[in-house]
Image (cartoon, rainbow, N blue to C red; front, side, top):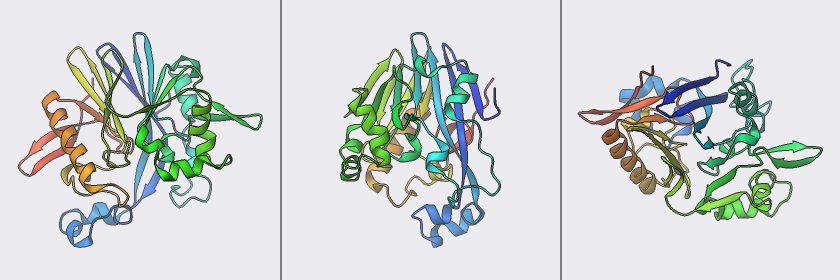
Length: 286
């Protein structure tokens, strides 16, 4: 197993966190927060560039093999990208890392795309002989309907050479893509939960196994500072909707003492109450 894949048990489930590659970002440039607000407490976090992983999650359960997001690092961080760390050698690809866990592409039964930002679905198809085919041919794929219907997505789908046509469009034409409007049960103990704001159709995945709970958060948070300051977020997010989704997740996660995995936060966490609200703490896993 590569050092880029971490696996741990959740009672009957086995959870694998797969990092397909790091991005280098500076919070001061990525977040829509005035300097006067972040500088007093978070100057070092905002001023210094940091590495952000790009993580997909595999959930192995009796009778189900579920992938949350499917990424392709070279597709969304090509050579010359300003987000590439200097002299960086990315990890093996997502499928290679799955194979190291003895998970074949044909084993995947469900694929949840948390939202329609390209780094979360760039790996849903693979190029073969000049054509794009589903990377996981036996998987039912689930995308928020509001993301599919967004004007930008619909415009991109009209161009057969666009990256959306080569990925989401292929899934739709193959009859593999299901559009989700509200919460949806995928398998016993696994549920898609609507959490709009980062995008109109953004969604989470909750896994419950014999009293233990895990949330796969997608981009509900990009950095732990957003947990402490839930009104801070990227410029493209819908502030009120995103804030409501964050509050709902925080209440549920605290009540369930849930484990949390976010696509771009390197640690597996839990939420902890503080006098000012909540914060992200790294979970101690056996």
